[in-house]
Length: 158
Image (cartoon, rainbow, N blue to C red; front, side, top):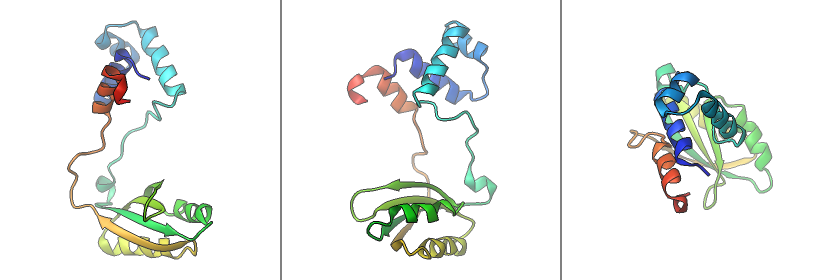
């Protein structure tokens, strides 16, 4: 659960990722020790996952974003995940319900490069079939600030 101060703290940190604890405390109108304590608790609870920079794959030469769904051979999920973990262009993999077993977020340098990545995925005997959708544009970028505001205001939205 988040309270209003936790939400304000996280939103301010996201808006100013290089801010120091003292300045953060000043902006929030609380003691530096309060900010440090809150950060430690949020980190221990897993609310804050990391403090690293957010990297834009397009800016480092990977302008193609695709979502690749996979159907996995019965009982071979660990083998499939192990194979996928070896492909650096696969940024995330989610277990899913429905038609596909896994959904991968994949980046590539070009469409031929994407085809190579898909071929590499299919080279695993654990993978039966793939289905690929290429993202043409980003309509709403990854975000959490609206969720932070909602969680702190209305506990029913959690």
